[in-house]
Image 1 (cartoon, each protein chain N blue to C red):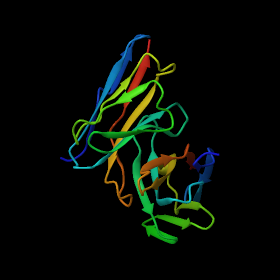
Image 2 (spheres, one colour):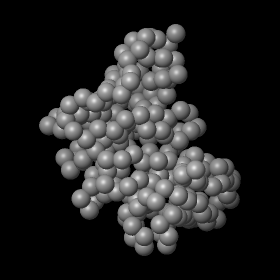
Image 3 (cartoon, helix red, strand yellow):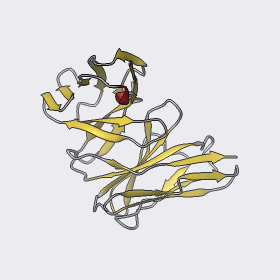
Image 4 (tube, rainbow over the protein chains, first blue to last red):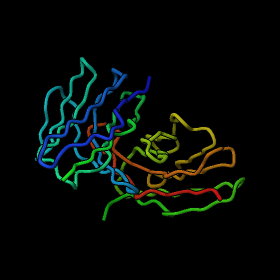
Length: 112
Length: 113
């Protein structure tokens, strides 16, 4: 079982719609979770991080965390063509086994 | 400007040769990471380091080596023992407490010819 799992997609949504990206993790010791966006050939850039159960909103983006279900999601409202990219979910485990583990990413395509 | 710098951006190497990828950060971060990314794939952890003179193997450490002699620097050597070294290599740094983001360099694209 992979430590961080994502559906590879592609996920296609029309412009203006809500895109929902999901991620599950296996290590219950994971403390913090990150969503990165990566354009082809570029390095990842951070969109949001979350470490408490519940929702965290930042502009058009909302991250959701459910530690009991070991589930993290990212919602993108009013999706734009510029949102088309690969979205990477990452989990951080601290406490001596500190490491940042990434999922394989979900490709999002926002269509006109 | 604070940031993390990888060099070179593109690197070509012949089979059987060792090559070293540079990663330098001036963010005063304790933790540094090396990841490998293959086409259409996510990031796989090669090595990581939380403090100077200490590092741990990640999920795919075979054929790679690292050093952490200075806080600012975390070079990665791809040895001839790495069977499929052609990939996009990303270096990242962060504070080790886990609630702050990891910053990435611009990456090094290594091609074995």
